[in-house]
Length: 159
Image (cartoon, rainbow, N blue to C red; front, side, top):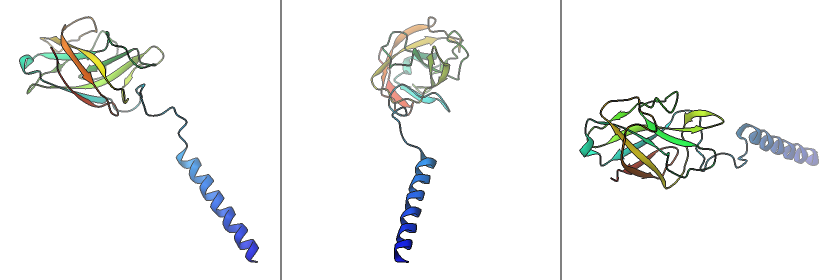
């Protein structure tokens, strides 16, 4: 009888462990890290040091940067855009701009950026109106270098 109880106890423990793994899944190395994610809400980039551009509109883009595999372009804008030629600018207020961050890839299009990429340099483009900007319009006024965490980052503007 004791042998049967021990066997049943071990079977119950094995089933519980197996069922728990099925529910939680296992990391196969495809999540987290760089590369940028793509679902859900976009990351937020806060740019400080923009006092000289108070009331102007800005976007950021990575047209001159080396990016992680799977990302063709990173863009920061007021909201999601449908194409890279219709990027809505963010108004500079209190010396800063707060932008949503999106990525573009050939295979998926424009999606929310949620990555953990480090040392990413983005051009800051300025315009007198909200746009729409494109990655070739607006005056490049400087750069920011960002260390992203879950798509979010804060960086100081450099002229």
